[in-house]
Amino acid sequence: MSPLRDPLWYKDAVFYELHVKAFFDSNADGVGDFPGLTAKLDYLQWLGINCIWLLPFYPSPFKDDGYDISDYRNIHSGFGTVQDFRTFLDEAHRRDIRVIVDLIVNHTSDQHAWFQEARLSPLSPKRQYYVWSDTDQRYRKARIIFIDTEKSNWTWDPEAKAYYWHRFFSHQPDLNYDNPEVRQAMLDVMSYWLDLGLDGFRCDAVPYLFEREGTNCENLPETHAYLRELRHRIDDRYQGRILLAEANQWPSDVRAYFADGDEFHMAFHFPLMPRMYMAVRSEDRRPITDIFTHTPAIPDPCQWCLFLRNHDELTLEMCTSEERDYMYYAYAADPLMRRNIGIARRLAPLMENDRRKIELMNSLLFTLPGSPIIYYGDEIGMGDNVHLGDRNGVRTPMQWTSDRNAGFSKADPTQVYLPVITDPVFSYQATNVENQVQPPHSLLNWMRRLITIRKQSPLLGRGTIDFLRPRNEKVLVHLREFQGEAMLLVHNLAGSAQPVELDLRRFRGAVPIEQFGLTRFPQISDHPYQLSLSPYGYYWFRLSQLEDPRAQYGIEDTAI
Ligand code: NOJ
Image (cartoon, rainbow, N blue to C red; front, side, top):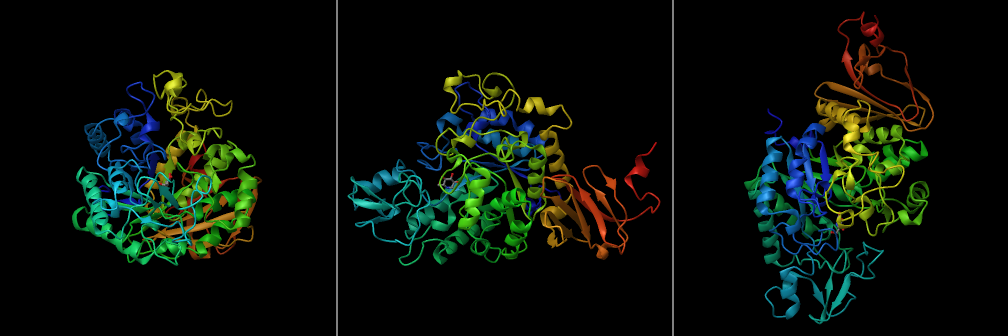
C-alpha cells in the first residue's frame, strides 16, 4: 500500500514541530508567515520529514504564544490569510508532507467572544461556556500547573462578579464541558479544520476537561468519554486523520487515553523524555529501562510519540523529587535556565554542543518504540537564550543563513519578534542551514541520513521491543522485531569507550549489518557476541541471515 494511503501512516512517520511565526518571514515585518513557511517546504521535503506539527496560528492576544485563542476559525492576521493557509496545506500535501495542528480544547483566551459575553451577565447565553463560582474554594485537590505565575486555579472577574476556573494562566478561562453546547462547539471547530484538509490534531492539555469535587480533576471518566466522541467524529467522517494527546501524566494514566484503540491514535511519552537525559548524564541505562517496565502495552493501532525537546520547558513533572534535583543539578546549574517545573533550554546546549551526545540522543529518539518528533532548529544544533522571559528562549527565529536576522527576515533587527541567537558558540553566523547543507558530515546531513534510515526500517515504527541486560550498565541494548525482521540497537551512554558482551544465540548464523555504513560485522555464533563502543557511540544493526559466508566482514567487501 502506498505509504500515503496507509491509515497507520503515523506509525512510520517522522514528525517535525514548528511555529509559523518562527520559520520564515516573507513580507519583512519581523514575523514568520504562511507564505514564508510554504517557501521553506522544499527544505522540509529535502530533510525527509513526513508530518509537520504546527503550533497555534489562530487569532490570539499571544499571552501564551497562541495557546490563548480568541477565534477558533481564523488565522492570526500577522501570519497570513486562510487562503495562504490553504496554499501551504496543498503544497505540503503535494510533497507528501502531512500537517497536524494544535486543537486547544481545554481553554480559550479571556478575549474570546464567548468569554466576553459570558462575563457580562449570569443570564448571558454564553455564561455556561465557562466554569464560575462564588468562592475560590472549590476543587481544591487540583494542582496548580503554572506555579511560576499562578497562585490559584480561580480568578475573580470584577465584571462577572464571580470567580472563573483556569488550569493554566489566569487569562485562559477553562471551557465548561458539562455544557453540551461547548461539547458540540469543539466538535464543530474540529470539523471546520478537517474539512480544509488537515491531517489531524495535537490536542492540548486533554486531562483537564472536566472538574469533579474531591478529585484532582485530571483524567476523569467524563473527560475520556468526551475525547472518545472527538475520535468518533474522526472515524465517522475523516478516516486517516489522527489525534495526538498532550497528557503530561505517568504512563499508566496516559495508557487510558488510548482506551480500546478508540480514543487517541498517539500520545506523547512524557516520562521517557527526561529519563533519556538522565541516562546520558549518569552513564546508566536504568532510567530508560525502568520507565519501560512501567509503560503498559498499548492497542495495536496506537503509537507513542517520542520527543527530546519542544516549545515548552523540558518538563520535569513526571519525575520524582530526587530525579528533579538531579536534572537541575545536571542541566540547569544557572537558575535562569529554570521555568515552572522544568528547564528552558534546547537540545544542543543541553548536550554542551557535543556532537557525539547530540547524535546519541537522536539515535535513542529514533529507535525506541514510537514515532519521533524533531523540534525545529534542533536538526542544525540551534542554541537558546535563557535571558528571554517565559519559554521564549527556545522559540527564537530559525537560522537559515549567516545574513542579517539569520536569513529569517529582511526586517530591521529590532522589529523581529524575538532576537536571533548571537552568543559566541551558537551564533546564527556559524549555526545555520546554509552552512550545513553541503558538508557531508554536518549535523544536518547526519539528521537527514538518520531520517532516511528510519524510513527504510518500518520495524522501528512498528516492531516489538526487548531490552537485553548485558553486565555493563553503561550500555543500552535493545532489539526491535517486526514480521520476521530484527534490528539490534546498541548505545554507549558513557563518555568513555565501553565493551559489551551480548547473548545473541537466538540469532545464531545471522550477520549484523551496521546501517549507517552498511558494514558487515562478524557472524553471530554460540559464543558471547563482543562489541566495543567509542564514547557515546551507537550501532544500528540489521540482523540478516548470511547469504555469502565468504563475505563475512565489511573489510572484505571494501578491500582493494
Ligand atoms: C500546553 C502547551 O504546550 C503550552 O505551551 C501551553 O502554555 C499550555 N498547554 C497551556 O495552553
